Length: 400
Image 1 (cartoon, helix red, strand yellow):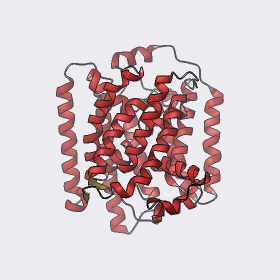
Image 2 (image 1 turned 135 degrees about the vertical axis):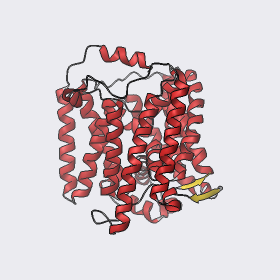
Image 3 (image 1 turned 45 degrees about the horizontal axis):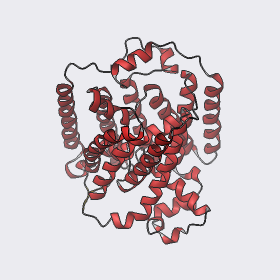
Image 4 (image 1 turned 90 degrees about the vertical axis):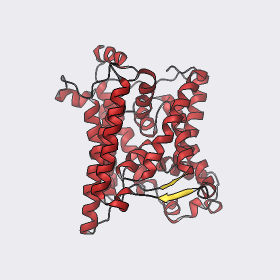
């Protein structure tokens, strides 16, 4: 959607609140948190953080897929600028939290760590096909969750294919791990948090300057709204800047409570593996699922998995936000070409995210905020993939 289209949509009459949907979302979050709290406060807190993430993503329509598409097609870089703000704030929060953890021996009883992954071929290839797939699927990792919460049938198809693609990639991981790699490189580990922050913040400023020059006099979606009120905080829409700050703060809170940054796509892979196991698949046949972390996750209930718990919170938070905005409208019409795009795009995103150690959230957002170079490599290859995906969308009857 271009800026002018967004402005017209915002002036349209506001739909009435859908009280049943909103209340159902609130009750589900409350009940879920209460059940999780029986095993300790940590998971309950992460579930509610997921709910706040879902509200933030939905009310601001904060999507990576649309941000890149608007930049390529309309030179509307507002969505990308909001991401730059989000990254800058998250970097500072991560630096403060992780360095404090290192000095004190831990926060909330555990040591904190960033999202680090190898800088290699598998990240580059995975990010490229993820970028292509998200344009066909219609959403990124986080976008899939909040649009499902908003009632999108097409996103349910994309999500199912996403899970399958992630599981498929997990079976191929031994091969991908033998491709060329420089190993995990953290600027904070190499130079210290101060120089690492200065270097990355300077790079973000340079990117912002380049985007501003490139976009020229094109109308941009404003980062803030002068008419933003407390009522809009509840029913939306939110300014992009508010969502960017909320996402950065909530990712920092996730680090403090979970011990690691926000991620999304591991949960999808685990869900598919659980289903495959129930259908007779033997995890012993896969080296990936014999690893300590994966094997432990597969052997326990999903409510013990941080990513799954937060993903559930995001869906319910988005559902609540959709009800408050009066926009929860499940649709059941799905043209064949659009269905094919959702399936292919979901598979590509799932496969790409698994071999690239995450999606736009786990690899890019959390990776860059952790000063891991794999986050920068991810976005460098996801953008050309996005460009390719934009040119394939018309083949499936999807509008750009």
